[in-house]
Amino acid sequence: MSAAKNHVLVVDDETDIRELLGMTLQRMGLETHCAASTVEAFALLEQHNYDLCLTDMRLPDGDGLSVLDYVARNHAGMPVAVITAHGSTENAVAALKAGAFDYLAKPVSLNQLRMLVRSALKLPRPQDRRASDGQETTPGFPALIGDSPLMRQTRQMIDRLARNQAPIHVTGESGSGKELAARLIHLNGSRQDGPFVAVNCGAIPENLMESEFFGYRKGAFTGAAADRDGFFQAANGGTLFLDEVADLPLLMQVKLLRVIQEKKVRKVGSTSEDNLDVRIISATHRNLTEEVKSGAFRQDLYYRLNVIELRMPSLREMHEDIPLLAGAILKRQVAGGSAPRLSAAALKELQAYDFPGNVRELENVLERALALAAGAEIRQEDLQLAAVRYDKDGADPDRSGLPLQERLDAVEKKAILAALEQTRFNRTAAAKLLGITFRALRYRMERLGIKGDLDSTN
Image (cartoon, rainbow, N blue to C red):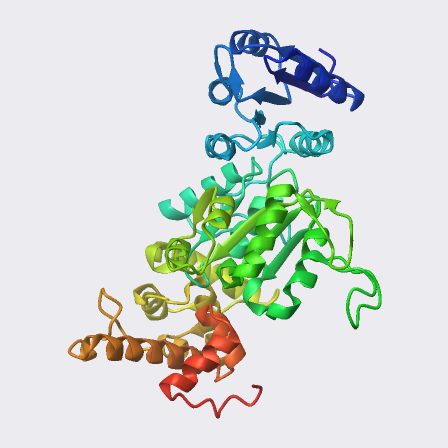
């Protein structure tokens, strides 16, 4: 087989579909072989090396999942895309969870087929991929640092997710690295040359959401002086990261669901729709399952976004990674200068602390310690860690006899005061540390009687 062309295997028992797909792929300059059954497909896979396999989910002697399994066992690294019947979302989700690169629904859209094929053929070969073992392979390339088993498992999961186009929902506490994980999935996948657009859904005023997400035409409303693209158009060909997706109001959830289902977007004030080629990665520190039960989040959108879940571990689950993390953070914070070392007592104090704000809190603690350190060593007293310790239920043991609501209020008040102290009473920074919006923090401070007089910026 000539090395000049990419080779694609098409598996479908319907002659007209095989011919349509074959002709379309050949016009794209691809060498194409076709099979009408799993037996024929396995025989061709034994004889040739392919760069992509397109298989129907329903075959006379098996299904697309058996083809997917065969490829995974015998041709690791080769992407497989499945073709499903119209409306068979469950089959598509099953295939994505089993490791399929992506899926197409019948009747097959040739535009979507071409986009899928181009994207699949851009996947880095295993020997060409950037390492993700916690070391930066190129200057400025992000990395998840740590040698703990949990961090190694997380990086391995990110590697697998980068090899497909399934919608991913990243869960984890505030400051645990959800956006960094999304960026790594993007940078290690077929969309690495496309844009990565990160959106904080909780920071957009509700009346501006539609125009911010979908764009608008000139004259669509007062102030629309020119056409403008939204987040979806800006992310076309790449990845759209929806952070704090649970903050989306229900009306916006309906519109987002339609865009994801149709893979088309209509600007405000436009009569036509534009095709989209965007991978969606969402994240939140909330429990989306509970949000669905309470009616605050649509169940159908939840299933669309949460095809595969990636859980980011908390820092207190990986105390053994703190020395490595702290060293990398200090090196970055001194911007090329000589980073001070942590004393044995300071390091012990860091490893004994629970870090409710996770890596983001560790960064803030070390930044403050750098400013306070008198010499080339950061001492335990330079860290100024909060002295509050909670029991296993998250409550202050000294208040365990109080009614539940008072206990919860006491825990919430201490967490807010600790964040405010850590950020020198800058409420914007404190809200970010706590993983809530500024408005939510202001409401909680008013309810709990917390004064923010020291915050001169807000």
